Length: 609
Ligand SMILES: CCCCCCCC/C=C\CCCCCCCCCC(=O)SCCNC(=O)CCNC(=O)[C@H](O)C(C)(C)COP(=O)(O)OP(=O)(O)OC[C@H]1O[C@@H](n2cnc3c(N)ncnc32)[C@H](O)[C@@H]1OP(=O)(O)O
Ligand SMILES: Cc1cc2nc3c(=O)[nH]c(=O)nc-3n(C[C@H](O)[C@H](O)[C@H](O)COP(=O)(O)OP(=O)(O)OC[C@H]3O[C@@H](n4cnc5c(N)ncnc54)[C@H](O)[C@@H]3O)c2cc1C
Image 1 (spheres, rainbow, N blue to C red):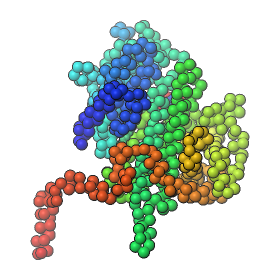
Image 2 (image 1 turned 180 degrees about the vertical axis):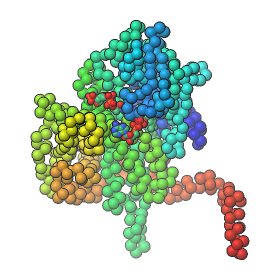
Image 3 (image 1 turned 135 degrees about the vertical axis):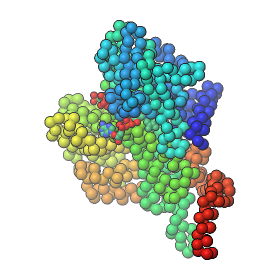
Image 4 (image 1 turned 180 degrees about the horizontal axis):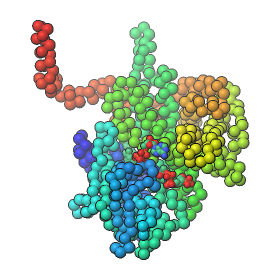
């Protein structure tokens, strides 16, 4: 499809999905499932995941009563317009202004520079009638920082931009189809006025007289919509990883190379330990991210209930967990999808393997909802704060509770003696805790050597990110272990999940061996034992690998991959796909007479053939 066709077709699908949701009708969970199977980024994502939650989280009761019924019936379509051409990560650096005019009781929205143009919001370019706009609030010449506003962008009769608004699509993005189904847009305001009651005023207010009234709740609640989306992105990472792994695992069982004896069949590539060492940790990650995603959903629900009761105590942890896990899981999944492409050899590079499209559509997850490095730095700040409070009498809680055992974890030596000891959950957990704590404490010690903390932080950014990742990996490993300790129906299933849990943990040790050795969390002998155990786990997972990906229950239609077909009938179908290519419509290609024939003829003449 051309870009225009792709965009229009996605509009068609989105509107059809909305019709089904209402006609059947579908529950919220079923609607999410439908979105999942629609399988293309589109304006509904931003309307439901960001526009509506932003109003719910930041609007007053009256604002919710006014706007939510319209949004819930999709009589208005909204998007979330925060990022600007010049500023994305640095939200406090946004330039768009919203200046209160007491004479007209309106805010005047303005884009003072080119870099202040909104740039990137999905659904903005061509579809949305409304947006939640983030802009600097100015009253009486004073800048109160960034606040959210509900703004109508387009005329409800003919969809034209309202006077004072310039709007459009930012152009083609990475990949052929992928994210190009979405109209990520730009937007400039030229002194565009909105009524005062369209500032989202749950967190702070501007009175009729133009007085700014800050609220007594933390201003970070303005970032609440991002926390909610980051949480869902973690579960999405599991879905995308599982999809790539399903394709690569099934194909690795079909594909044979070398090893034929006396003219017999060759070896299935899945039997090579190198293939297993690349593939099975990704299979384990798909399960691990699913379980940590379930836990994060619980954490998010819990913090939401607490916030409703004005208990803000767990907000920093919820922010650190959603930011860190969003970052860690999306980076691992993007790398994992690319690894799965390579695991499928040359055929993985074919469009019909399903992997190039999956990669292209998935990889921006490392950037949207916060650049992955910037988000890990938020985790690092949280960890440094927690370390600095150790010994103050305030016991660390939640995911940092392990830091409360700092004295032990800083001194302990791993008691792993034989390979099977690596199947002991307490020993594995302690190894990850020791490594995470020691990395965090080492950063804190290095920071304390700087007179200026912010300067020290800048100097140590790379180490801080590594410490944050170590903490996030500990969370994933610990939630996998907790899952195993809970109720899992079926002993066989539990055994399989145990194998995957230890593959996940031991492979991380192998991959980040430098961290584990340099922090003395394990010795090099214990590292060898971990490798030994890992190989044995691969052997145990091997006979069940295909069943473990079949368990994801993805249809062939959803996978969209010739290599990942359930029936394994890969080669005939690769031919079928190839023959469908427009280049094969004719035997002699268009351009032969123009370019190839004159070239050949010229050579034939000069060679006198
Ligand atoms: C084959 C086909 C397959 C098809 C498959 C289809 C798949 C479809 C794919 C995806 C569907 C998913 C759809 C998802 C849609 C996503 C759309 C993306 C939308 C966006 O990107 S919106 C824009 C997001 N922008 C960002 O995330 C910006 C990142 N920056 C920030 O968040 C912050 O500014 C910051 C975290 C970097 C803060 O920096 P700083 O300047 O230090 O911050 P301050 O404002 O001064 O505040 C510091 C203080 O606040 C605490 N804090 C920061 N953030 C939060 C928070 N969110 N919650 C709570 N607290 C927060 C911070 O810790 C500091 O606290 P302290 O003072 O230290 O105590
Ligand atoms: C597909 C897609 C959809 C999007 N949808 C929306 C949307 O609907 N609404 C919306 O408002 N926005 C949206 N965005 C924008 C997105 O949220 C931002 O791109 C994202 O937050 C990253 O910001 P940036 O582009 O400014 O990156 P930058 O901050 O410019 O990052 C560039 C580089 O600088 C590094 N860097 C930046 N700051 C620091 C620091 N403090 N320390 C160390 N390194 C740093 C980063 O790690 C990165 O390597 C979307 C983006 C994409 C790609």
